[in-house]
Length: 278
Length: 243
Image (cartoon, rainbow over all chains, first blue to last red; front, side, top):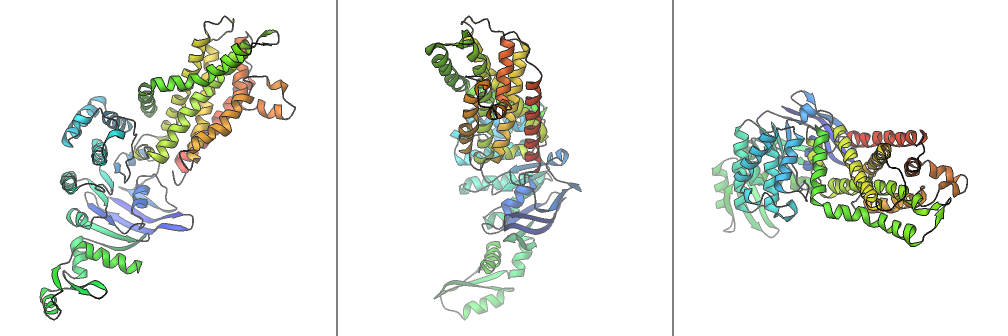
């Protein structure tokens, strides 16, 4: 179990994360959502100890997480938004370095590297330096590196950013597989479809504060499961309804420019973030 | 174990960039030796100037080798590649990471110093370089590796590393007992320069080279620098809020 207690991060006078309290269960697939600057990456960075909180604490299975907590950190692995690895190392060396940092035996490092690089379709490029890889390949390598140490908790900061649709689907399948092994996954993403498909629960952050916390289904239910989009003089406006009949009745009373659809997590996000951003 | 991991990483880097590292470690010191030692042939205290110069250039090469190995590498890893994040989240104790960096940096410095010794070996100078000389070179390397670590944690951008070289390493190279004795400096300034680590390393290596005792003062001063900058770098990696 991961517990964020009163977690706050200030950069000068700017508060990136503002007294965040969260409890994430073991084996949960948890999404951190929010507009740019909402504090998602800062939260992940504090959970990976790259940043230290200005206030508050993080506990993992009851033990406080800090830079000295080697036993707690052994449970963690992170995939950052940026390609955070030595650009002048080969793929093999990146994997070896990761294995050594986690004290894996040499034989295990070799076996796991081959298995994961093969799985990711990177095995033929293993001698290539990171600098000469495409963005998608670097992203896959980061995932291989993170999975190599079989972490109990996987922190993913926009892992599919910049990926094409096919690679993204492959990544979703991979993450589902990882999650079935009772690993906790914390994901930040800008793709609401991704969060809706993968996450058991999501937290909506805005300006560092927690706005909503629930399952995607419950958030959609709260918003109204049925949506009618209308084209007006000011653009598209959407109305949400809790039952289908109300939505259809409304649709019938509007012009031909209106359309009916199911509400998505993106609608919840847009309503929440849009309202706050004003 | 974590120390060995960092040394392995340094070895990978050294193996890959062997020619570049060797060439860049040699160019500047060899130029000094050619210009001041062979080109402008002169004497110092009745001895060929080269006898004075070689120990100083060896110490200087150790300093620049260690410093540049860590300062540039760590600045790029922290600010550009973000590769330090991989270490921060791992269970490898951060003190082991720092120690590995310091030893790795010092070994790179020693490599540069040894290359100078190898190059000047054919010149018949009767200078003595023994185990103690190599220990001083190693100690000098550890001091400048820790200084480089502290500066790389302070760096705001990866272009800061070359600036540190211009403002710290370059003046030390010329002033600290390398090309001329600090005894020739005005009082006050002389005492300040004498307290700098390179001045002490040069003096100790030179004393040994001339068959004298290195003295204890230099070890004490280098030890103080090592402890102070070592503690600061540990403080940064454990306590700095935004690495």
